[in-house]
Length: 115
Image (cartoon, rainbow, N blue to C red; front, side, top):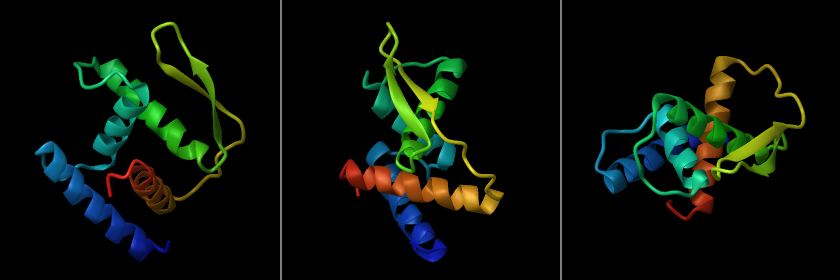
């Protein structure tokens, strides 16, 4: 997808998620949090600030695993997934990073058949 297509799909996804969760238009952090909660697999609950950061990290690892950068190593005793960086992520510009993350998030939700 080119940048225009990514941004169009991203906006469509934001609208769909906002409607489904009865919320304002979610930003990248909110989307990462939702993916993290999905990947954790324990449903909606209260999370501490640290747990929210961990959930966003889980989401980032999950998304970048599609590009071969991370590999799931397993889960800990509490059921939290742990990932290992298997090849370094290139130094993308901020604009490139944003487009890649948006594209990976859109792909994730398409696979989950949300969009």
